[in-house]
Image (cartoon, rainbow, N blue to C red; front, side):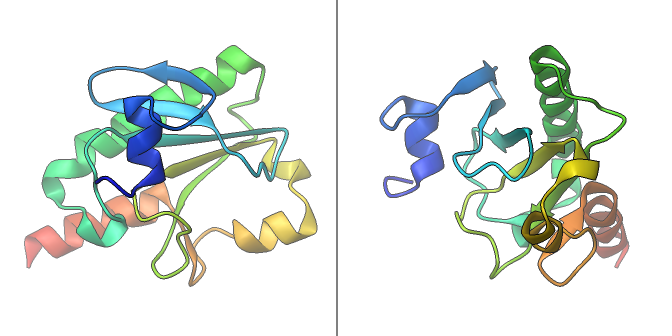
Amino acid sequence: MSNCVFCKIISGNAPGEIFYQDDKVVVFKDIKPAAKYHFLAIPKEHIINVNSLTFDHIQLIEHLIVKGKEVLIEKGGDVNDVRLGFHLPPFNSVSHLHLHVLSPASEISLIGRLIFRPNSWWFSSVDQIIKKIQNTSRL
């Protein structure tokens, strides 16, 4: 998508502090960190948001998690004190699927705890998204 800032970061046409990339995902630093370690793990494929995910995307989500955690460990974060999740539409700031990886979760600011509150109307844990996809695929 030519107007998507994340697609531009992937292609090298916009700045981004990329810590990892392979043929499927990119992990980079969030420009407005809510924790000492705040990374975004995104698919290279332009997927608009969590509502666009299907059962076939579960492996991609798991890959985002693994690579996000690997970068977190490499940079000195604590995977035992981490918050992983997605903002839900219309509360996602960029219309390109992105997994937030925040650590230490116990030290997120008050505002950050509201913005990244798991399983709220605006932010969902990875587990909740995977369950939703699995339940939807059974219908």
